[in-house]
Amino acid sequence: KYAILALMMTPFAAIAGNYPDKQITMICPYSAGGGGDTVTRMIAKLAGDIMGVKINVENKTGGGATIGIGAVSKSKPDGYTIGFVSTSPITIRPHMMKAPYHPLKDLTYIGQFIADSQPLVVLKDSPHKSLKDLISFAKANPGKLRWSTSVQRGGPHVAVEAMFKAEGAKATFIPFKGGSKVLAALLGGTIDAGMMSEGNKSTLDGQTRILAEGTPNKNPVDSSVPTLTDAG
Image (cartoon, rainbow, N blue to C red; front, side, top):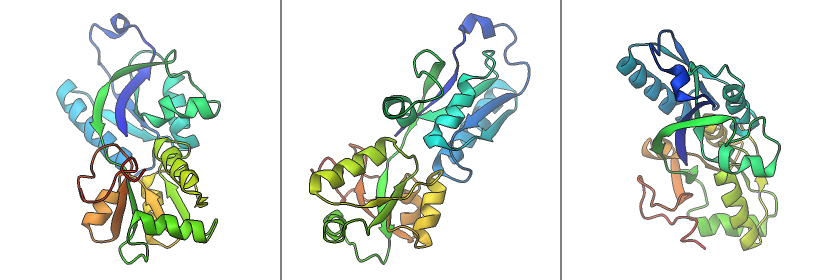
C-alpha cells in the first residue's frame, strides 16, 4: 500500500507568496491509533517543523477512506487543507462504486512518503499455522472463516477475495473502519484473520502470527512467509 499526500486541485502559483501563513489541516481518512493515522501524524509534525507552522490532523473515517478524501476534494483550494491517501481509494474504489471525488480532476498529488506492507495475520495460538491451513478451513467450512482488512473494497480486500475465489473457498468479510479496529477485533476473537499494516507490530509484540504478505515484496517482519503472488 502506497501513501501519498494530496490537496484540492489548485494551481501552485495560487498558493505561492507567503504560504503558509496560518495553520494547515491534514485530513486522515483512517481511524485514530491505526497505521495510517500514526504515519500521518509523524509527517504532519515533521512538515510543520520544517515549514514553521502547525499542521492539525483531523480524522474523517468511513466509506473505505472515501469520506475523508471527499472532504479534501471539496475543501477550499488554497493549500490549507491537505490529506493522506493510500492507493486503494484512488485506483480501485472509484471503479467499484460511486466516489465523492474524481481521482484525477479533483485532487493534486504532492508526493509519496511511504510504502508499507500488508501482512495477513491470525492470533499467535490460532490453529491455522499457514496460509494453506487457512484456505483449507475456508473450503471445508464455507462462510465460517471471518476476516477483515483496514479498507473495504481496497487493494488488500480485493486481493484476498480473489485468492479465496481462485481456491474455491468461501469466507465471511466483516467490515471495520481502519486497521486499528481490525486488529482489536482479531485480538478480541470477533474475526479469525486480518490483513492490515498493524499486523507487523502485533506480531513483533507476540500477539499475532503472519501467514502471508499482501504486497509483491517479502514481509519485513517474517520474510519466510509467502506473498499472495507466490502462493498462486
